[in-house]
Image (cartoon, rainbow, N blue to C red):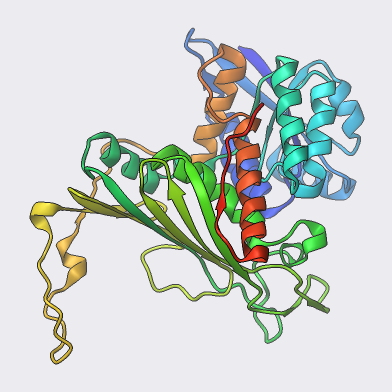
Length: 382
């Protein structure tokens, strides 16, 4: 059995722990590794690294992880570990990845890769010039709901795509009346890399680019709807960055996308994120896992009449797209794709260049909000 050593940094946070450590890396271990094209099994051997030794030791004991450390430099110096992964804070990410590249490690990370476009570009160029493998998480492309949208697109179902409407978000409790907040307080502090525009426009860039057309221009309005919250120590703090974003995008090919992102919205839709795609021949609505479609021959013909209750049950006029294949956890699916890229040189389109594109759109979104105008999204040079 072959072995692949992976350094995991930042896996005590919610996303790093649940999706990357437990549901991806440890899931590979529990299934006996990854079967390579040669038929050989690849053992995934992680080492978890963090500043808090007590947390690292507790995590290792809980999950039967053999190796943990508080010494990142020593971990990077070990030639037996070839991949460095980071899911820590945004403001530390570029420096950590640069350090890992200097140590000769392939790098994979959460996004955004920075809060500054020039830093992101420099990092992507350094990774490209190193000859090492590099990648950024693009998890929403691997969601079953969005994979079904891609299937409909590839089949020609939509005809010409006209528009995309996205709704993302949920109510994040303020923490001041008995229900604790379900997001960390740094999300609401600009100096700590917080803000929903920086967080979510990085996601919407790769979703739109890969499924519906390259983003060519953006108009974005941000808002800080909830100005005061309670932190992890039970103390009140002022929120000085955006907790909602209302953005419109012009896409290559002429489609228009509108995506609302908010941590101050109560959900009355099918999922925490939904995308409606309307085309000349058909439409579809997708959430995280499910997708419904309506072809033009099945489209009802409503008539506007405010004098009587609506007679059409619009939900019943859509057909669910069935599960025609098994869908693994989206983070795990992309992890396996990156690992095969490293070990087998398999195709991989999600390098740090994609991460820089996400930072670019977030930066332009913030600038659009500040200047209250549309901005073009120029091509980046790497």
